[in-house]
Image (cartoon, rainbow, N blue to C red; front, side):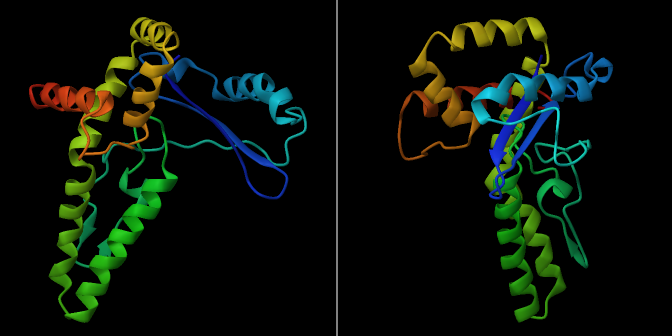
Length: 203
């Protein structure tokens, strides 16, 4: 099933655990996410020493826009950051890093606008977002469309899980940990994906 699962310590002895489905998966609306979360929690219960039957709070759900799918991100009097700007990574569902990064960019633009008393300077924010994430998010959106097909997802998982080396460079691409000044397998594969995206309409 194309989607994400996560679990990380909160810092007070509890953990944040969740699941997400890609809307590119044809049958995503028919999946009971409450049951999916429960199954995932029980699957990792022993490893994380948690009791899924006694959660500290009720599960909640919401839609998370990804890959820069929300716009506009700036206007005469506002800038939009993080999940509100659709900044989550379609490769892995990560939104925390991108919330911090877009907040930093917004703060820089806002500081310049105030310092020079120039509201028009806020429009530079969209350019910064495009320069930082534009191409990468196009590749990620294409990836999300491809793995939205369960047959392809299963085959990719089968092949990938058999090679640690392959998975290491795949993780580098998915986590946006590429090094532009290097020419390794991950960078070569990503450049190939960029070339494909350029030939793909509406990527």
